[in-house]
Image (cartoon, rainbow, N blue to C red; front, side, top):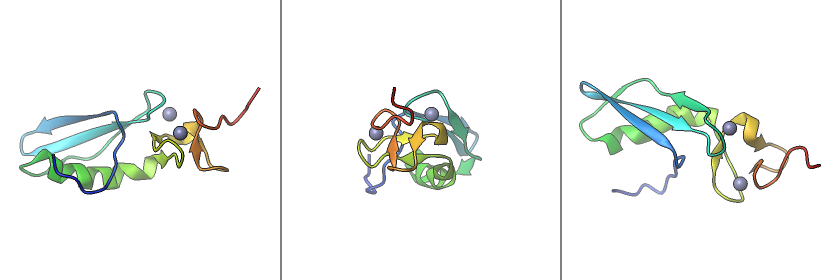
Length: 90
Ligand SMILES: [Zn+2]
Ligand SMILES: [Zn+2]
């Protein structure tokens, strides 16, 4: 596995479609998933980075634990996920 220094969500699935790869990335907290368009390439790792560039717009990175979460699980005020910093503490 080659390292780019980039991080991806812990949960993602790769679907092979002929000579292309399609990725579904998931929020660390729930089942929210975003599926990218297919990216053609021989090696999955090559396309992963491109696919993630597309999907990234739908995710937010927690500055505390490093998790990638959907908008619903992100507390923008503090730039942390709702597991680290709940939006509505009771
Ligand atoms: Zn967090
Ligand atoms: Zn979520």
